[in-house]
Length: 221
Image (cartoon, rainbow, N blue to C red; front, side, top):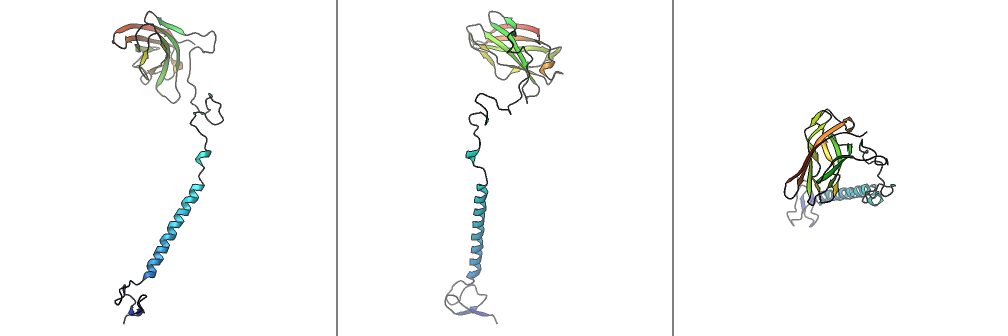
């Protein structure tokens, strides 16, 4: 015979295993559900407390040094931070030397071109940068490109530039050209002793060729 208990609502005798009272219909065994609810609430509270404690241990963003100005903490304005890339290798005459001068490569009615320096950029492999001083002597905007290059005794497959070298009338530019060395035995600027290339000048608006001169020279030491 099933064990009897009293209904918690109407007091009638019902089986202990009954989920509802057959007399009043009240649901039985509320204690188990209440216990589960209490456990869930405690778990949620514990998670919230741990989350808040974890946030309190993180450093405040307001205390971090600001880098929006581009100047490292403790560095005076206009001074490069100590972690900046290593300076490019420069094998041209030092600009600080009062006797140093640029090497004139071409000077005609269209353009004046002088060699400034060869250098490398830290972290950029397979590229040597060639900086020229170029002066547009025409009344039109010009485009300047270098072709048919050779370094020492090796032909240079490509001499490019990061952006097209356009020069406004009467203006000058030192936009660097790039000597790609992947197909050369040369791996650094210091290994280049002689350079040859053709300076090609075109009217940007009409596309007409204005100048084409081949120059050869030894790198100043």
